[in-house]
Image (cartoon, rainbow, N blue to C red; front, side, top):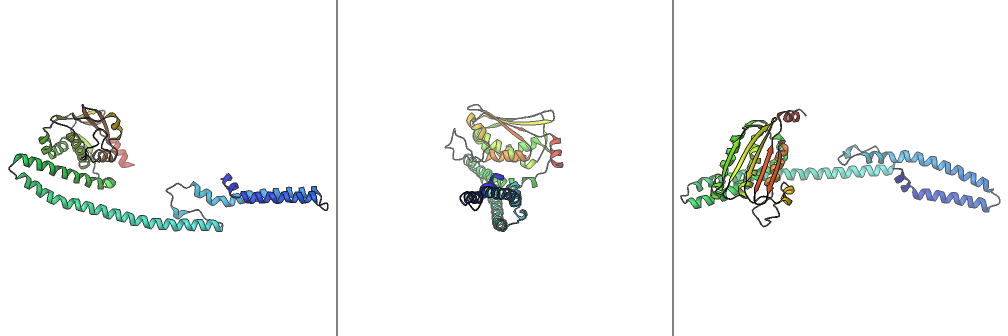
Length: 334
């Protein structure tokens, strides 16, 4: 701050020094004034000016010091008290801009909330004809046609479900209900929802659960598993998907292993990034790059760690590590 103050007052300091040099020059050239007297006056002037600078530094930098110590998220309505006319101008302009931006932010937030509500309402409205369509498809006698239509219906259903949960994730903390749930029930429910797709691709499931209960939110865990199973089925052909759960030292792990095309090593660090669809098959227009991203977001809220292991051509294994019970208790009490 001292350097900034001296830089701000550099013109004044230079002008003052120029006046002192001028006084010394007059004392040197004017025989009526002794040079010693002129030098004494210059010395007293410089000393007085130095004391004046110190006093003004303390007074003039107080406002800006307090302003500079505030972080980027500080409340602009709590600005330091202004002393000088220029500080009053700066304070008033900052307050005016803060009020203007606050009003604009409120309008934008209201617009975003309205858009979110409209999309959620639209998704719920679309679900009604989708349910009717499912019933109509199930009555089709042609098995091949029925299977193909159910597959396309399922794709639409999963995309709508993904959009619905994506809009709810920012408010997930208000929707969590942590309890001990039946892991097998959640898994079989999600497997059942994909049965038509799995039958079409000749994919089965091999489920082995050492631990069948976990402490979490059933609805959001189901959504996570749905994204991982969808990903596994999508990139697998005529093979089983192995699902295992293990427990050690009060930590439960759930692994989902497919034998599909796998993920290239250079893509592993990016598969949870929003919109990332991979580099090995970049022409896959059906991929949205949202499923694993949303699963990761939900996992962070549920304190579930997701790890992935994969080799090209050998399949992919996703491992979910559930938190210990005392971790949830600590989080609730925090």
